[in-house]
Amino acid sequence: MEKIIERKLEAGSSIKLQEKLDSRMNELKKKFGGEEMSYYWGQEKKKLMIKSRYFTGEIHLTPKSLQMWIDIPFLFRPFKGKVVTELTNEINSIVNNGENYENTQQAV
Image (tube, rainbow, N blue to C red):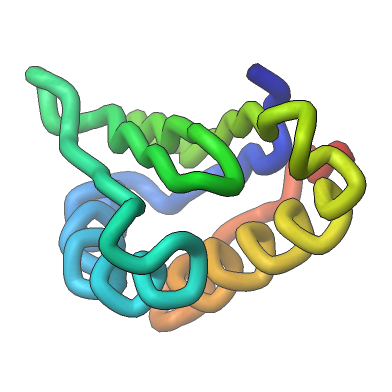
């Protein structure tokens, strides 16, 4: 998997961010894979696993950061730039909604 996002978060904001991610997942399902997209939180509720027909990914939350990794199947690699841009925009809109962050990495 390739890391595409890493954000620093204010102390204590990861719980709020987890709630925001939960509330936005139905919208993201429609945008990135419909009913074929699934997600679940890992055992410690700090790792969100996402699987759609276009990509698989993980979002890791720590008390001070958010990181996202994705893997795009070979067939959809010509659309990698678009997928990465759309995911980055969605995560930015979730993080920006009332949370302060500092962009520490955004690789494509």
